[in-house]
Length: 80
Image 1 (tube, rainbow, N blue to C red):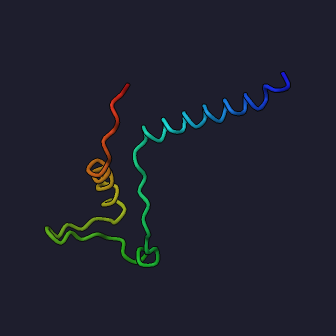
Image 2: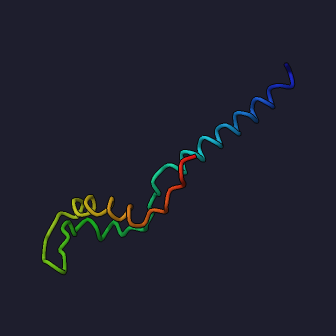
């Protein structure tokens, strides 16, 4: 029994690695970008240059982000 502790620890590490890999593969990709936070505070509206529509900046982002995720998401692996 005394030698089983390192073996159990190794099994736990392997299991956690396998589970986290599966979760990462199934999740949507994350987007990270550099933001100019100081410049964002003053400008609260988005004006469309094509049609002139004006929206709150956060509302416009909420509308566009899911569409952009779908366009740029890598293909998901086929289920086994």
